[in-house]
Amino acid sequence: MLRYIDHQKMGRASEGWLDSHFHFSFADYCNPENIRFGVLRVLNDDLVQPGTGFEAHPHANMEIISYVIDGALTHADNMGNQRTLTRGQVQYMSAGTGVIHSEYNHGAELLRFLQVWIVPDEKGITPNYGDLPLTFSDRENRWLQIATGVKNQKSEAPIRIHADVNVYAALIHRDQPLTFAVEAQRQAYLVVIEGRAVVNTITLSMRDALEVTEETIRIVPEDTAHVLLIEMAKA
Image (cartoon, rainbow, N blue to C red; front, side):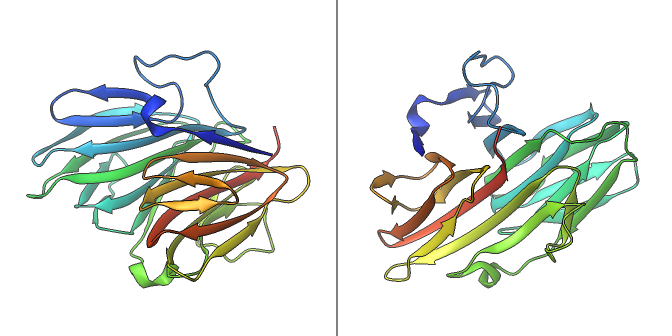
């Protein structure tokens, strides 16, 4: 089963320094029929102006992945971590018992990144942070697995989060379609980050999404499509 999500109908927030598209209810955007998709609780597409950012704030009992699309994202937290990531690079944080962190754009260019929040299957874990200085070619015309659950012994994904989830990214070129099989009792959330693509019979533009339940999808880009896919147990 497929369900199309039009980015033009998503929640929005614009505060001058920040322009966001909310795939699910977040901040002042509250839609009781759009709280989450399985354990995927938040997926925000954030545009952050140069010299601005999210000041230090707390999180607890949430698995958080940030995927940088353009610009430079600088992270700092109360565990002593401070890193700057650029296009195609990823950071993750298990907030667990509590973390205070900030996310800034100290560069001269507009920062665009996705922040993904996943509900953990265990509360009160010890907080943890890590990042992946990936090269963008790692995902060309193939699924690059970024994250998986800590209990998954079959995957070599570098990020291990406390949930039954698999996260993939791909940069798909014209005439090289990519498929993904969502197995029985599984579901996935596909986001077109950049470009346009036809997924089975549905055309998705930049920021559009697709809920996939127990079905194989075939992604055919119009030119080049940059996508993120979050696969999980069926809710």
